[in-house]
Length: 546
Picture 1 (cartoon, one colour):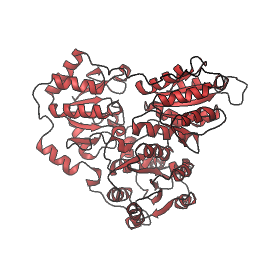
Picture 2: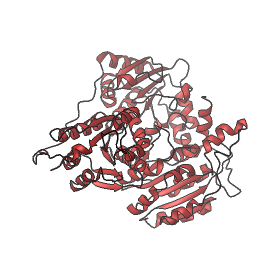
Picture 3: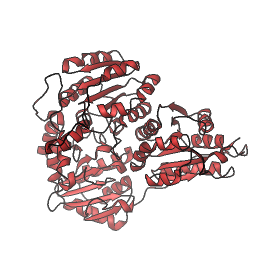
């Protein structure tokens, strides 16, 4: 067999069951080899959509995914999606055809570009090493939680590989989780034993069932309240002591309880400016601790009392075993009562400013939360609007929320939702977009319709780049560069073959209610004309940090 076929088959043998992307001459054979080996190929209409859909699939499924790309221009088209995945430590393999001849039209230094955006470059260098190099790429992606660019030179793809080269190829077993030192366990036990108001903030590094269970047990023993970063939203959704998201998205009650904590422990969480509101959620005299299996992550964004190098689940279990008798600490009846009544943003009173043909985004989001099934997966694009679907739409667990915001790029939301929908076909997928992001990613509406996914695409349409309007508008700047005339996005959806509706009031959502009741077999687009005179609360909070 040829190298291209051997590499494709090896990737599938190592657990890659979905591959996304756009096929050209350079990646035609390797993609077909993956399909022949049993992987599902999902053709997107742009390489950026392919990379982002693969990212969304890997995050939601917990399994590695691949994106397949043509050499040169195919690779550069996908770079924004690759960057988001790399910054998010998504286990993704970028299978990139490559030319090595500098005079070729397709030549770019793909290895250097991969490094520049935080991905890990690998290369297939020979027929003799091709299978081992493909296996190594998947192993680093999965066990190292990295986005790996596997460059596949055209000159190597056509070399012959021995028919028995694949043998019994499989992904090597995962190394054991990093165990904390005994002294670090003792320090964390002492801090928890002394704390009266401990709060755990769990991030991407704790976004797993094993870590969740270990931290819930430790929370019960230590009396800690349980919060997450935005990317781990839903991790503790069934726990009565959970605070939901810490940071700019925090509800008033969450912000109050985190700010009053005397101990904050970040578990696989950077405790960055977003999660800690530029430090404003850390009270005077609060002890701050961070647990992470990557030493360089400790203290990268925040001064710490001390850091613990260790896997989140392994460390949480070790600390639980070393703790003494269970403590009540922050888990008082009064706190539990307030959490039951005041935690959700939808329970915070607000003045509904709907009118003049526009709907308040809070009113819209609450209405959608009521009419959509609880078993859902929500993916959110970037923009002023993003806090409303992120926090007003409830999610069943961490696999119900896919948040591609590490690079804060507009335009990734629809492709993210496609990947997440394929990972959880048992749930209703919801793509929450701004009008800017919807238009940037509109080519993937064809992908959505072709796949027949029963997805609700909700466009929060303020006819502008709202973040820039609210950032620069108060200073009297000319906003003509960030405002746009009305676009009939519902008609665009219908043009792709979707059911579509324009929403200006809650009554207009009757069409969505009927779509849900029908047991949808295809997608629907909601163009919601939202009010636009005020910035979202989280954006107003973020501006205070500048």
